[in-house]
Amino acid sequence: MATKKPPLRAVAADETAAPPSQPMTVEQAAKNGSHRDLLVAIRDRIAETVAGASCPPRDLASLTKRLQDIAHQIEAIDARDAEGDPGQRIRELESALRAIDPSHPLLTGAIDDRYDASAI
Image (cartoon, rainbow, N blue to C red; front, top):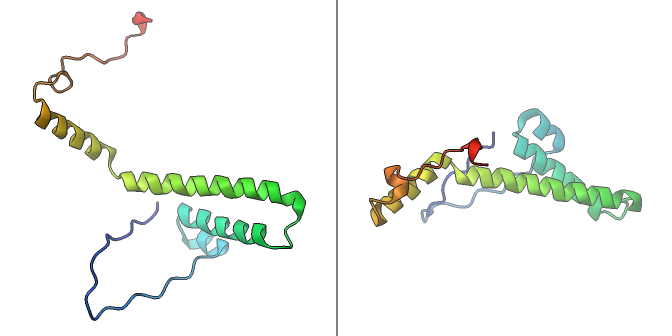
């Protein structure tokens, strides 16, 4: 599972920026990294190959497609991590609805949204 980044904060006057970390190689990510780390390393390796003049034209289309697929997978992992607990979001929405209309049918159980196969 991907590690969560700490929240942003203001820096003190005596603090300096940390040097940027070196990205993991594919081998390092495969041995010690998360699934996301591995995808990022593969993405970077494919991007280097595609950008290089020595990339064979016959491989360019398949590598570009694979690069797009990996980028989408990374975005999906990031989006899932950003969402956090889906139950928390539901509780927030219920709380907001309760503040607007405490007697709303969704809150009182008046709406029966169970699946009924015989209704088809």
